[in-house]
Image (cartoon, rainbow, N blue to C red; front, top):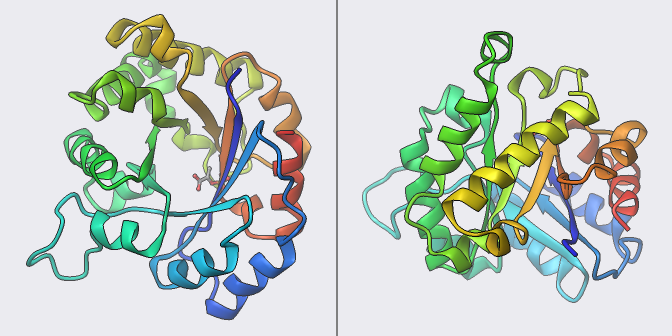
Length: 251
Ligand code: PEP
């Protein structure tokens, strides 16, 4: 059975004392349950402190992006070596905001996915369609291309460990959630693409999250779907109480 993975994506929010306070507020309250994993994906400046504060707890800390190179003349960038050195365990790759504002492509996502595994980081690879693509019936083809190109060349054992986050762009930060059936249909499609690219055994191991205005009020219905194994959550992950409710829904 796949575990449920609830990942908070803080985006560019909070200052350091607020970030620390969040961990203090959830400390001891996140269930130590093999069936659910809680990850906080925070801005780079907070990662060191958050890794230290969560040491010995069941909360994992992730980054929201990274470069694919290990070091070098890339002013302003952060490398997988640096994240691994800090004790970060996960990294979000190809979030739609990075694709839209920072020219992230399937090719760069793919290079980053390879780099992540090389440095013991679990990638959370985001895919999703625009409203125009959905209305033009292009969702399934677009998602298939993002999955195939984003994960190209990864060995089966790494694909099995990859977390794929299906995030329809029109549902991110808008309050609009895909219906749980529609979200599940795309997540099932992702699993079928993975089956075709690898094997049934591998595809059945992959954790596929849904993201897009997930909140305590709709998380149960989403997590009850056959191919939705968790959530990548923006707005509702910023408050400790609401994040805890989302994690509890996964137990
Ligand atoms: C996200 O940041 O990936 C996201 C899904 O945001 P929100 O939950 O606010 O829609």
